[in-house]
Length: 317
Ligand code: COA
Ligand code: ZN
Image 1 (spheres, protein in one colour):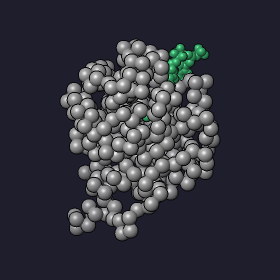
Image 2 (cartoon, rainbow, N blue to C red):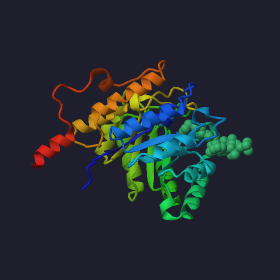
Image 3 (cartoon, rainbow, N blue to C red):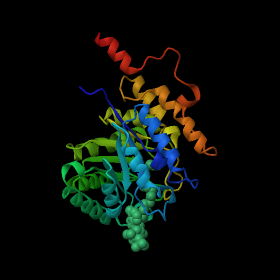
Image 4 (cartoon, helix red, strand yellow):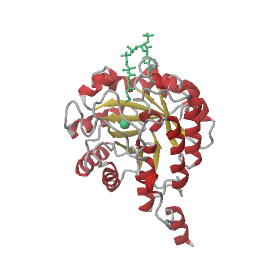
């Protein structure tokens, strides 16, 4: 039996850093990754395989991946927007590749300079390339659908388009689908509607959620996704995050608060909440001018709080 009820994935080192002009030194990124893994985080998206000319923050992708792969038990992810990025990830030995395309045509053109159908074709090339690899070298492939719940260029996004692209990526060879509210347009009702439709479209695949807290509905959206059966969530420490090609996008949902919410609902994440909050110190030192968000970081755990794993153990005695 698994000791985890919900999988959480730290994306702060990718989503959180991609917009910042401050380069975070490689040693600091690795200190952050090691500390968060030690707090029980099992999946971390550690970098992005994009042209360093475009996003200098990820010029050290190779060193960061290498350092992260040395951590026992950690699943190491990297973002790949195209075949070249996926090839870099495979060469370095990441466990999971997070491919992104946007459901919004305008955002896809701005972000990856492709028509959506060209991105699907890119995804197919990646999946075909991965199939030629021996199983032990083949990373799992996530089909990420950005701006799936709204777009700051186009406004509302048709759920039919989200379904259609989820089906296209599943058919091409995705191991998981990730539905992303890149600019924080979602609300719980939309989340329920879109996730139900996507999950019915690709019933054979796990469907994860990636929410931004732009308008304060991030954790409410998590509970709506939980109602639909979603058991995989991205979040970032201290709520860092944003996309340079999506005006108005702010940070991801706060990892500490996500883990606290899940834990309070009796859903185990494997993460030690106090140890996770302590990792904020590393980020605060590295980015003194960047605001850090989060209720748990500000207020701490309620007095006498008993974590879900201990409550479960007490029940089973
Ligand atoms: N990693 C490193 N270099 C890459 C690369 C990758 N993943 N993809 C392309 N390149 C290089 C090419 O080799 C080429 O180099 P050259 O000029 O020395 O020949 C150059 O970049 C241009 O290649 P091209 O295929 O024409 O790419 P592009 O200029 O159309 O850019 C993307 C396409 C997808 C690579 C770029 O738009 C991108 O990285 N977008 C993602 C932006 C982002 O990080 N968004 C936030 C996360 S969702
Ligand atoms: Zn994001």
